Image (cartoon, rainbow over all chains, first blue to last red; front, side, top):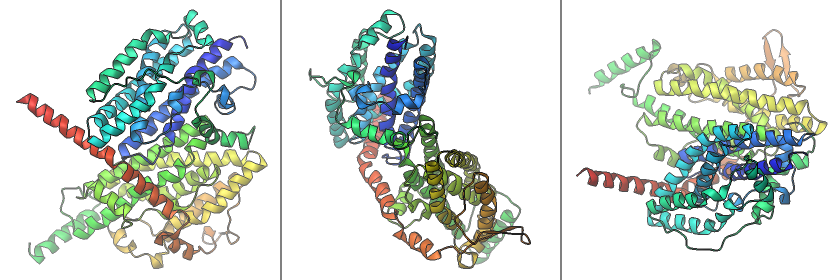
Length: 251
Length: 318
């Protein structure tokens, strides 16, 4: 394949939306209220829509038998390169919101830059996706504030979730070799450039939500290199079940 | 109000319905009309919400990205239907919390069909095709029902349901045209969902307690048996078209009647499920009740936050 770096770069973006969409999809029908249920499914739907655009493009680059589905469903765990944050479980609604919020702020800043990509396909996808993601960011930020500044119980749960997931935020700003090649070519986004803005935005919302900003300096990484948390295998068992059980069929 | 005055109001009310006028929330209505509508609209809303569970069950396992987004969108539509049906019901003077309470305590019913398990991917096709198909037959007449908010909600519900039905049929068609394993999966789903779908259209006319009054108020335009016949006549050719077999050895075209004769429905099974002893009644109720209980702290937080914001705003205004 000629465009291996571009292909890898796309997976680095779309595996995040795929796995986060999958996590949110688990919640359908089980939300704390009808409105939040609909909102979470809606975000899941947006993320899968974005994933499809990215993977359709990646499948074209790869050529041969490659399709959006073969990329989504037929890799081994070590070949998925999403960040660890998005695969974390829906422990309770505070965890779901914290995971969403910590990702959305990143995602929005990322897409702002991706819109400037020299690759017309990526900039077009980013153009469409950013409209959806600004809604996601508003939803998750509002809920961080509601839970942080709601009742004593919600505050405690929200703080726990932020403290727990904080260790996965640093990985959002790691770069792989393919990322570096793509940044050099003006296709990829240099995430390090908006790391400060990210923490600044996150901290502003946390302060508004009357939550403590975690001080921990110990972070986890590995997802971008395909070394995942123990949750990932179970996500894939569900997600790949049909494709693995009934190979080479049309659905 | 004297008895005569009430009788007079009732007569005017019945005359309005006979003229096909819509009854609106602020209009006078007999108490029985209000209660019957609360019962039916909430039962409908609950069915949408409980109905999210058997399909939601397959979102994480859908076989392709295209199917996954279509299923997500569909289940989300059901949630939306629930939302505006609860709203329509609230116009009759009952709160959503009270309605949920009726569901969770078993006082209110929901469609029994959702007490059957979804065990293969083909069940997503069968539900769309048969269950939504039967629902449409039940619901299209409701677009003209006498209670305005319900009739208006139903117009949108029916548009979306008709899309779901085509989507379900398309899943079945793809399977039926697929590998032998896929075709077998489709046939198996049809075998399991056919009879419960017929039961969805309600007990036999001779056993139905609400039919007469409901027909008068245009809450019902056709009887259960008429609707069931319509469903069968419509669905059999669709099964034929994709090479699947309806699991009823007594099914036979009746030239004279111009419709199908069909075998006897297992009404014992119907009443067993209605009374709460179907394969998944417990699971469905547990899922709804735990979602509600686990979400209590979230809803409390949202209220507490809104109150704090209000307080903050009024302090600022001073």
